[in-house]
Image (cartoon, rainbow, N blue to C red):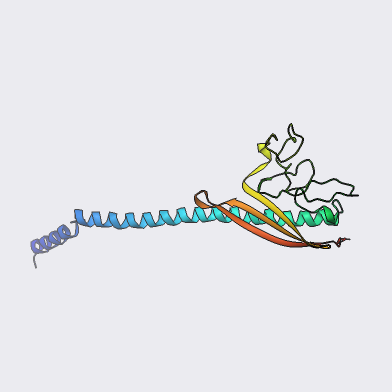
Length: 198
């Protein structure tokens, strides 16, 4: 083969090698990449949404556990007598050193701090004062928005099972996806025997 033939052979090969992509090939490649990117974006969105829901569920569980532990602590420290553990309107304050109005029998916003009575889960938790009627938990109570833990509501239900045993049900509602509410329920039993820790 002569030099000219070799050169022509190389030129033909390089012309064929430098052709590039056709418009159809480029459109197909972009389409495939777009599908992949849409799938990735959907997966990231789902992961972020699931992460937020998971965080809210965890915080709701913590509110449930803290509420049950606080009730046990109130009993163990004898800050409240066993007969005082009841929902509002059913508390027996007879001969008790500390007067207590009871736990709310409806869902209330969860507060970062207890109210004037020093107990979480009661109607005075988010109120600045009892309002004109002098009763906490009514519509005339001025609300302190800084005390509210946004997105969480709690209800504590207390049922007398016997003279020495009560059932405590703590329900916490939390913000779920798309504005829906989820609910976590914790159940505990409280007896009349104070545990003393040393």
